[in-house]
Image (cartoon, rainbow, N blue to C red; front, side, top):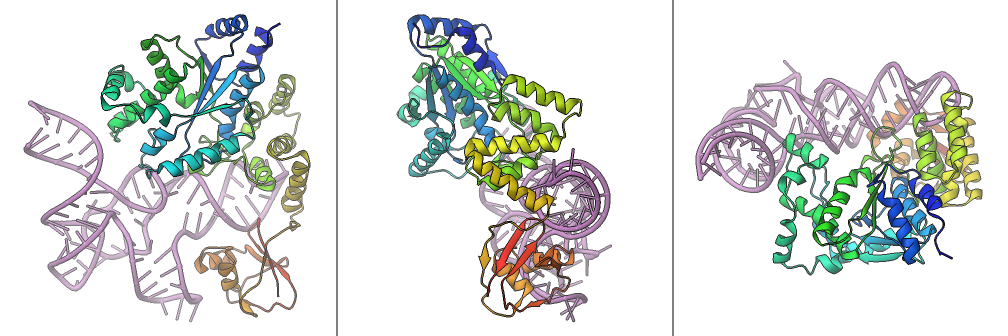
Length: 404
RNA sequence: GGGGAGAUGGCAGAGUGGUCAAUUGCACCAGACUGUAAAUCUGGCGGCGGAAGCCUUCGGUGGUUCAAAUCCAUCUCUCCCCA
């Protein structure tokens, strides 16, 4: 009696929502071998603790790691604390501030905390790559670097583009894929997971393992989730993300703001709905039998339920409906007590932090975006005398309860 | 080592002595509309001021000039070509 499910069941789960498996046929062989030997596969996922805030784009690959846990394999989360201390290789342009070891460790912990919403923390093995990378001598680094050629490095999409566009590439960036590959050697990884943008790095891992006489790891890439703007990949720096620690209302709202064409991909990559249901949704979208809005509502509910609770999702939906469909006022809004009474509307908006400058406040009033108790304010010199609490509304979603 | 080009607002990218708080695109904010914070359209998008106007901003510093993002010097960073 094996502790693993049958190979075909394992494969079905592993394949789901995956972009590529390299090499494809190796998967079966590995799985069969692990069943025979009773040894779980070592499945590696590296993470960058320099930005510890996880969003549902990260969740795609974390969920894949979870799948491996669910079928009895050994998940290893590599906290790239060493690499994070140096900077970021894919760094589109700016050098990131160097982090101290304490900061990185702290971030690593935050990362794990957040990831525990998705992973089974009990069986997860967590390692820090500084453990082996920080003790390498310069000589060893040179030896490591000799395993790869510049031409091969330049095959990497990102490097190639930057090279062609005359944007700088620092030498140490070439060391990144190698450092990451070293992690695989160190762990004797059977499988490494990553987003499609990681494909090159993951493949370097295979090459290096081969050089170290190891069986090269299987590379599995997951699609990059597009952000709420529907164009660029989800990323904190593009501000188009849905954070997994966000409150239910924001999470629901942000999900509702994604363009319609992302409904199916989101269902596929960030939720657990089964294949039949997914097909059904795709059908409804393509033949227009389902209202995209309703499907999106469902998506938003599912996502909020995943990171919070079902009840929270229902609450968030109510909140959303009240706000945007009935154009009402949410139940819970911040209260603010102005320092003077009566108070200038501009000062009120700025002092309460609703806007960042009087200029902006003025602009919003001129655009007719400011209301007090539902009544539009048109005079920028408006002076508000507060004898009872009133609700200040700016734009569609900024509310403030002003109290005496 | 030699020669050349460049650094502009969140990003991309114009501007090359006054008319520049700086064209445009993306992002963002608001309004209209709607099936949603989708799409589309319209407006806004450094700060203070009701406005006129003023203040700070075009890699850093110093200078020329009545006047500089624009000219000069120098520093920092980047790219290209030759060796």
